[in-house]
Length: 118
Image (cartoon, rainbow, N blue to C red):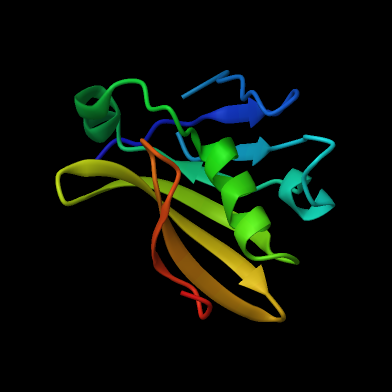
């Protein structure tokens, strides 16, 4: 299966796609925890990308949502996937030395599963 390489640089919360495969992203927004600005991988399956089209919540925004929901978290990876017929971001992050995962709805930004606090 082919993967798209995406390199995104956050500018006021907006990501800029540059190239195609597995990627590195940085999110920078003065309101967000500095840990959200550390780089993380983004994995996008071209077939899912084409099927779902533009999504209101991109990977950088999903990373910001995770950091806001889990203060102190550092996002490691975002992967576009599907749950219940809709697009989600599978987010891997570290918090207090543990690696965790949550799903962030790519349409409304809600956290759909995972995390100890849910």
